[in-house]
Image: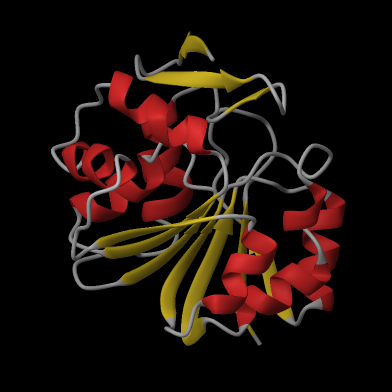
Length: 198
């Protein structure tokens, strides 16, 4: 996978299968904090469902503030790639450890197709980070059906955040019963998306 230095100096990688980077080129760490942690109000003892673990930046940012994270990921190459990265968060050592197969009380990575693995989860979450590859490249994780599966795992006041503001994303969230609002504008002209339970 090709390394890309993003606008805030942090490194992302370009996935050859999907032909997309794992993060915004404006700043990988900035994206985690401003598109996910802050809008979802993630703090100590919150539980986060992280869909699209990738290189673990979003999960690391959540761990950094004391949250507990369950991540879904199907690409074992992404997990291996974490071992070659160094990012300025203390919690990234937990990312590397769990990605290499070890266990940790505050991070669990569930391997496999998220369409299937999400159905195995029994716990409820305060926040959902929806961060797979884009709707055209990874359409199965942007469907009304998948959003309904996510909804079942959210606590009443939970917040879902995603970088995508594509019409298909927002339409399917609404069909699944979410209230949809603009999220922050970070690194591009369009806003991200926040979704709440009705």
